[in-house]
Image (cartoon, rainbow, N blue to C red; front, top):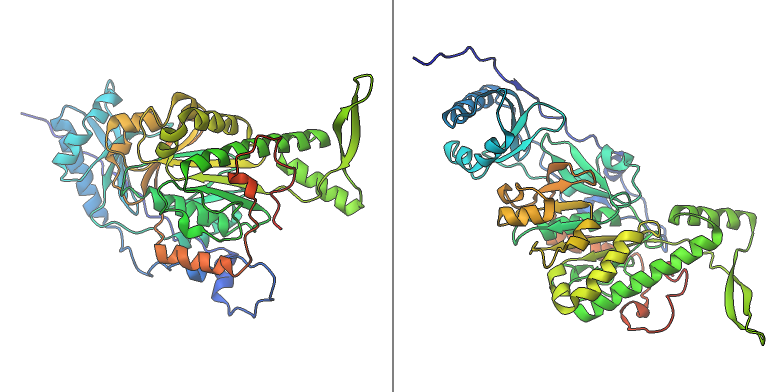
Length: 469
């Protein structure tokens, strides 16, 4: 006869309190004054949809503990002994922490994910080790899914207090706390996800996060959209360096221009003896305060004896803005000019961080011919939305699990250290994006640089030409 042990009821964690609103959210509730014409104003939060007041009911502790017992029974049926010690309910999934019996292999429990899903009548189950603890996390989808709204993330105190230069509101973690990442520290981002996984909405939320915190003179965009539909909505905003690029051959030219701009920025920084864009802009600020004119030494030719002739040229005193290059479909570019694209991306990924240039690259086909070993090695930070197979998940993240995601913004985020966390991305509608774009167009015209998409065999791009006009 089988002995039944008196199991201790698992600890059910309470949901975190609603994200604390920041100053911006409080200011949005106040009556706005008449705007001064000609001044740049950030988009108001009112352009984004507000989350409903009571969207999640109280936690049913008894039901969660009952589920935990059922899960223990299912695992025991498959020969896995252990105890569920903690339950963490979240907006989309609930995490059950299993403390396995000694000698239990993690790989065996991970391999049972499909069987656990079937036995628990769930769509899919993701199993992963809880970092830093002797526990295996089993993530079961909730019966009703809570929607994450971009407005509550941008209005949160966590987003406002973020010290990042290029903060991105990625979404909420399993427990429901806001997840804010810094693109400047990543320093580049590789995104994969199949159709309907929420990849394009995720890219929109990242772009909007930057538009809500940077003026055109502080951050400029080069948007490459071979699919012609996803990023074309941003056409005409003052932050663009060039119209949205839809021709793959012009996209290659734009990437080469970005490499030249990066090299030119490196030369300008070397002349001032600074190590990065922050140091360069700080040095310019000091010189402007003192009324000092900065110069650089440039070779202009050779004299009769063949010795080089140098002359001092004034350095442009405009601060250098960040440049964010967004590519919505890498596969199309790799088909047209794989080697050229790979070489440009590799060079930018290795060096562009110090020059204030950052890449956000996305693909719906995470195969090895699109995400090559070279590209993967230079993008330590990666995000995977739902993919079709374990092979695709391993290609983008180096481990399986992304095929078990629920779609519609459910993602796995891998930081530079290789640690993978599950994040539920916010939803933003096309109407919200269009209203923000319409507002930004009233704030000024874009100052395009024609050379970005013009094939040029001459020297590098001229210094400081990325500053807003």
